[in-house]
Length: 141
Image (cartoon, rainbow, N blue to C red; front, side):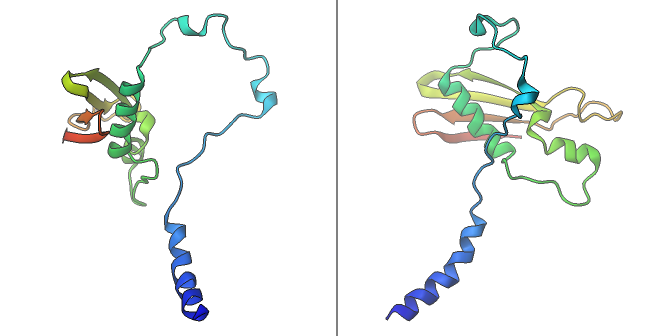
């Protein structure tokens, strides 16, 4: 009776390796961070942008769909393609709509992935996110 259960567990255990957790943030060593302090008024930083919780989560949901954290370029990818696989190669905007809907736009940042080949056109996405159920209602590429 215990043997079939043990065999089933042994067969399923390797499947756990397929479920990777998202990466955790990396902290700099203390000696690297010495001398860097928080400003006296962190909320009033010049050039800062304030984003509400629902807008932030909608943007995060859209980015996770557009560029999942574990997405990797193919082995034969060009440097430009590798650049376009990185989340930091994109800018985003979000705007609240009616009835708990958020509109999110994602587009390539000007510069980083151009590599002397000119601007990247038509390589972004527009999302409509329902913040009541946290589902993607629509997407266009």
